[in-house]
Length: 98
Image (cartoon, rainbow, N blue to C red; front, side, top):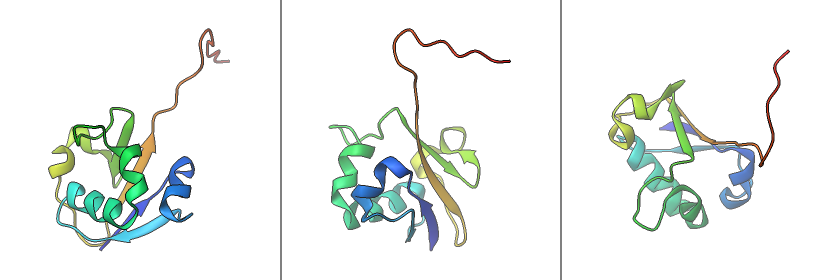
């Protein structure tokens, strides 16, 4: 069993939970269990072709799964999986660093 962290914008679709315990041998299997338990999350995580949306970032123990084996990445008990949605600024906004 692993802990899956749900970001604030998606919590209404996960019963308000900020963390959920899920099972699975891979990241994909854990996400499948998550979306079977909370079906309304599916449209926020996957596109119409069943692929993860490009703005959904998944980190397994602080590592981006894109740098591992994607959703085929193996997981083990005690791992932490975090869903981190991309955040972008609006039109014409420029970040200024001081």
